[in-house]
Length: 470
Image (cartoon, rainbow, N blue to C red; front, side, top):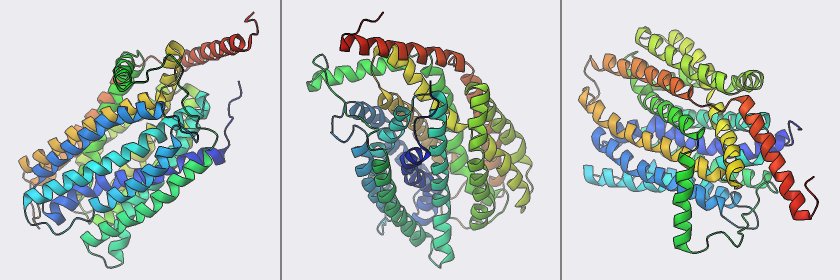
């Protein structure tokens, strides 16, 4: 079987939309809590509750969007139209999210955050689920999928850089905290319009519309019943469930890590936010980016399972050991942690690639291509845990003594943040790696699945053409 059928140009064009998607996610994960608590003045507990409400809806909408995109019959594809429209609407949503009007009461601040984040997440679903599903669909071989999701992670890292740096750039140009966030979100809106169209253009001819046969459901009631049957089958997939559970635990760790990062560096290590972004977070993204070829090579050499396990496990051990002992007022020691953390975190691309491999097993059993449904559930589960994590974190910050909008905090707050940012987050990464060991889709098993799938398709083609299967 030929190992690569897609050009790097096509793969890069497909993956380019991830710049805008990840830039929005980074702005929300890194800056949203600090922006609404410190600048807008919303109570941390109300912030957490707003996140819970908005993200839970976002999670529910993911498998619905996946199901819809699986069954869309537009002539220009079943995924691509959602990507280009979703990019424009997502940019609009994030702009209003970071540009609130002057609000006086806690209730008005809470409701504004709920509504704008609700719509932002809805538009995120519209572009993100079809986009990741298309990535699993345009490549067939395991190695090709690794490269596709490697390109996707590369552009995601560029988006991560933009989400991190844009606010710092606007601050350096003399803008205050509020204006810098607003200008940054407007810049991302423009970017999203460009990259979503780029993906639409470069994947032309790679996204095929859904053709409904006479046996497929047509009424609303039949479609709803079909959706729940599909969901039930997906959650019983012997390879998907342990992979999903491992990623859920890892997502809980990443949610705490990204949300607490700036607070940890500021309150525990006594470092300036702008310097943390440039001297720690920026190098982390660089190390993460340059690790991509390493993880693609390791997956080709040893299969995806072993590298994915060791990446998550070593990241957890590093987090448990290093962050509680980093010295205060030092940028050099956190840079070492950023180097190893970035390298180990690069293994995340293998998890997404494994979902595409799991879909092959589903297609072998059912005869249907349901990347949208699988990636919809993939995103739904992780967003539910993010919602719970945000809600828990908001109340937890108040419990450990964080004062919203205060210039000075309790001296003990730094150590309490350290326990969360280090041992708690690290233990979750270790737990995720241990859960992942229960996933039985090895390279050998997947090769056999693809051989059977190719054989099944060839037999079906011969039957449809009237050629003996002989």
